Image 1 (cartoon, rainbow, N blue to C red):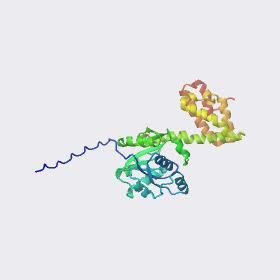
Image 2: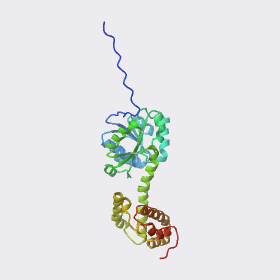
Image 3: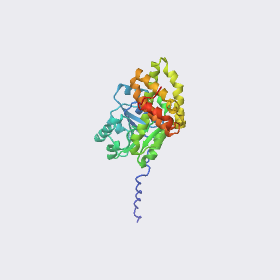
Image 4: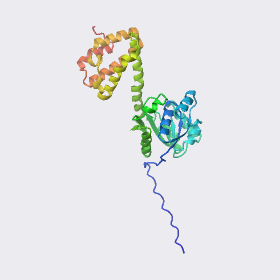
Length: 315
């Protein structure tokens, strides 16, 4: 008589925060193949992953797909979601993200175990709650880079940071995904996403505005090629600021030159009054930082602050 068959022991339950196991080659879909989505899709394809479908409606998106993901078919968002069995990247504008995710969940286009990753800097995991509710794995992965949506972007990805918010069990996957993109993860807590994004927007977006304001005022002063004048100055200022922090401050505000700043404001008011409020706001903040860093003594700052606050100072 043969021995009774023994039942196989049940596998131990996986701890809630134990790393999940994914195939080496991921099956990926991209919803929102704009500047960011198309570039990240192309980078993942170059890393050996299968980008099986992408969604995007505009003519610019179609052209970008043909350039960056020529072998990837364009499908509806729901079809892309169903095809992306391992990883769905949702790279849509911040304000559209919640509606897109909710719509996919309501359409039954998301599946349990699938990673749904958005690229918004402003949002964390909460916006992916409809996906999590049907068993998908939520992930926020924001590349800290500005994109043009061209192949040139692919050369800029190496070494950039990604603001990542992930459940504990997805941290290993997120780190691997960022590594495949050639980047470095910066772990950002859910509640800190708005502050993280505000810092990047303040630094990068406002920098573009500031540079163009400076170029416009140089043109007003008769300079034909303001970019030629600004390029070496701004590159040095940026490099010094990143390396030295507030010790990189130079110029009339950091020296407390109230008379110079007053003349700046007078001429700006006459030539480009729209530039006066941002000049004042930045000069006040620069003075605050210079004082706090010990670059400007409070006594020397008093006349300057009077000028910035609209108090008459003798020429």
